[in-house]
Length: 175
Ligand SMILES: C[S@@+](CC[C@H](N)C(=O)[O-])C[C@H]1O[C@@H](n2cnc3c(N)ncnc32)[C@H](O)[C@@H]1O
Image 1 (cartoon, protein in one colour):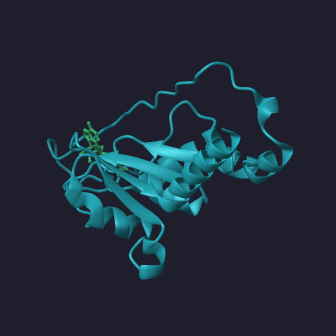
Image 2 (cartoon, rainbow, N blue to C red):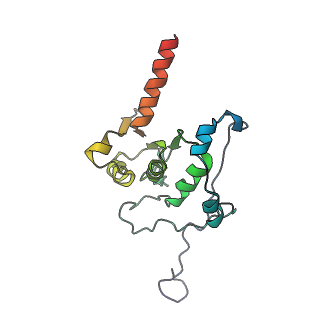
Image 3 (cartoon, rainbow, N blue to C red):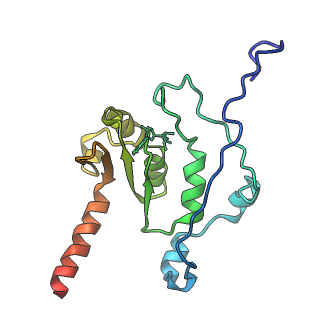
């Protein structure tokens, strides 16, 4: 928006950012069970009508004045929403190594996926809780923080921990 219609008022802000996609080896589409595929289907109309196929995605960035994201360069919700839909199957866990206000966790929850985040600023906990909807006692049970000696903090959902436990148990049973 142009605040005043005169030269020097236009302030370009993050006009273009890149999304880099890494893939470890060739993806084996046949390894995905039919039932998981069904749960992960992408709505073609949503894809088409919102221009997800375009090289450049146009999105309104989070405005600097927004309360929850003050001083954090948060993603617009639409960004993790699209990426989670396009690159993860049902039951998978989404990782954001630069967690900030937890936009990725918010959208992962909406899309019924587990998520983990790494963040160095401990004080962001309350903002993350609020944004991702872990404020009430009931939802609190699904949110956990691990503090690491390196000074990084790992925010994970309890579903993730449970699945880790189950995996370890089945390993023990096999031993
Ligand atoms: C651009 S913000 C991330 C925005 C976030 N994904 C969101 O949508 O809310 C980058 C965040 O990465 C955090 N950060 C920077 N270096 C880090 C590191 N080495 N490990 C973990 N987090 C880091 C910063 O504290 C900051 O909150």
